[in-house]
Image 1 (tube, helix red, strand yellow):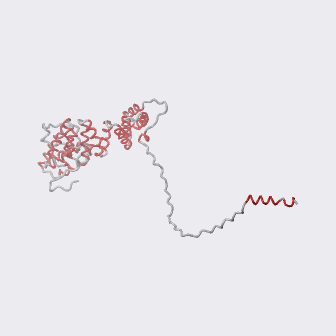
Image 2 (cartoon, helix red, strand yellow):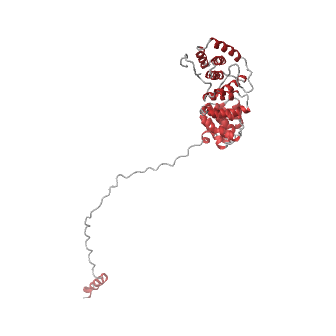
Image 3 (cartoon, helix red, strand yellow):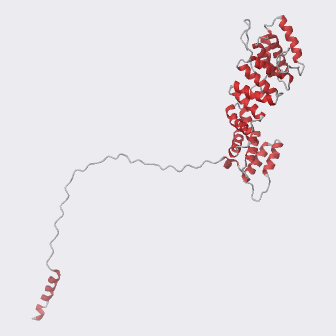
Length: 347
C-alpha cells in the first residue's frame, strides 16, 4: 500500500516548487510599415589628403661639399689661389668645400666670383646675393654684383647695390660712376649727368665720366654742355673711336659740318672696324663744300696730335673734339642727324 502511494508527495513537491504555471508570452505583432523619407546624398566625395609640402633645399644645400673626415686643408685659401691663377673650376671645387666648413660672406663672395669666372652666371649671382643678404656691409660683393648687372643691361638691379654702397660711403667715386651708367641704361639722362658731374669734381681727368656727360647731354639736346665735356676728352686718354663718333654727332647737330666730318674720319682711323663711323663720314662728305673739305682736312690733322691743348674750362677749341660713352654702356651714338636738304636717308 505504501509502495503505491509514495510518488504522490513527490509530485506535490514539484508542483509547490514551480507554483502556478506561467502564461505563455503574447505573440509579437509585425510592425506596420511607416512612410520613410529617403535622402539623396549623392556620390560620396573622396577627399585626398595632400602630403605636407617639402622644404626646398637652400642654396647652401645645393652647393656646399663636405670634406673628408679629418681633412684640415684650408680650402678658402686654396680657392683664392686658384682664382688668382685663372683656374675657375678648381676654385669652385675648393670653395664649395670651404663653404661647408664656414659659410661666411667672404666665402660666398669668392665662390660667386669663381662661378662667374667659370661661366655659370646664375650660380655666381646667387652666391653673391647670399653674401650681401647675410652681411649688408659686404661692399666687395655688392661691387661685383653691380658690375655684373650693368654688364647685362640690368640698370635697375645694379642700382639696388650701388645705392647701398653710396649710403655707406658717399665719396665712393667708382660707385658714383656706376650709378651714372645705371641711370644711362634706364634713360634717366638728367640723373646720369648729375652723377657723372660729381665724379669729375673729384676726378677731373676721368675721360669716361666726361664722355658720358656729353653722351647724356646729347640725348636731351643740351649740345653746348655735350660739347664742353666732349672737347675735354681730347686732352685725355685713352681715346676710342666711339668717342670721336659722338663728337661728330655733337658738331653736326650744332651745324659745324666740316668739324663733324673730321671727327667721324678720326673715329674711323682709331677703330678701323667701326662701320658706323665710316657710314657717318661718307654720308656727311657727300654734302661738303670745297671750303668745308679744306677745313675738315686741317682739323683732322690737329685731331691726330694727342693730347690737344684745351681751355681752362674745357670749352671751345679751334679744332673738333671727341666724345664717347663708356664702352660698357653700349658704345657711341650710332647715327648723326642731318639738317641738309640734299642729304638722303641716314644709314
